Image (cartoon, rainbow, N blue to C red):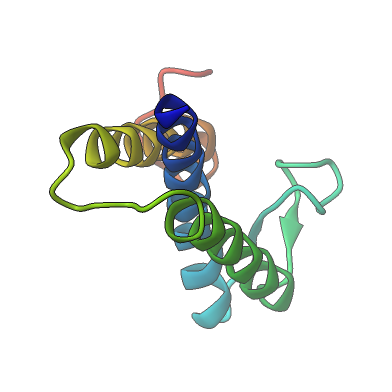
Length: 108
């Protein structure tokens, strides 16, 4: 069942990557899109909501990476699964939020 650990690390990477923009925007005091905004993902949520959402994502990412199996930075499959999750969420966030913040987004 080692492959299930890799799946967990992949999803951990998604959550860890998603934690960054929300937490950073929140601690900077800036409103940012979140699932709790109206409309969801388009409207802005307060900086406090974003800090809490970023923290929640960080906790889930930690649990998926550090508490499932034995994550090893020297194991290529572990790092690859985590890295692909981080990269995929990063690209998806860039495409999604780039249209709101002046980024280069292929989604129009």
